[in-house]
Length: 290
Image (cartoon, rainbow, N blue to C red; front, top):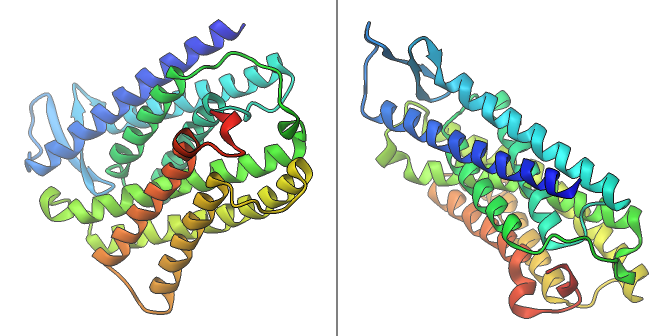
């Protein structure tokens, strides 16, 4: 059954790449200022970018449909792997990468429903495609769990909050990058709107990341006999949390807006990725997950 499930991941990867291409074409056609015509290609403005209609087909709807199908395929894979292995499918780098992509796709769909800003799908989809390609490239054979990973409840909660927080952080990152590139993209969507989107997504990511740290310390005490070991992955997660704390403090207390705020969110998401990949370079107690 696993080979069939893995095929679903390749299909999902293809759909995500296709969705990014479609959204990129929608955005670039909007930048060229193509006007509504009576020909086979028409432009309408929706969600801050021009939506392209070809032969009566709304390409924006096609893009959302592709994302929804990718979500369904990723969900099927995660559930199917859990059934086959008889455990939480969150115990190695392959499984975490797939779950991370699942959370990013969820954030993309929720972000579009909440903000109607399709331009964010380009950045979010690109990150998701890269992570899924990485997840497919690393070992995904089913191996016996090491003792530290055998507390299923705490493991699932700890990693689950990390995944959900990372998905929201990716949406915040995409909005921040779009804000910084806005002068060159010349989007109808205003910079203040993008600034607000990046902030709201970060507000969602922050408590999720906080819960990840708290549950992780409980899990560490069960697995290794102490709540904190200054393991490289633990330290990277704490630094990431501190960056988001600094962002929220600067935003709420100091009134930061604009480029400074956006750059902080870019740095924060780089820290999220470093937390994910750091054990490849520094080893530590989490090195079993690689």
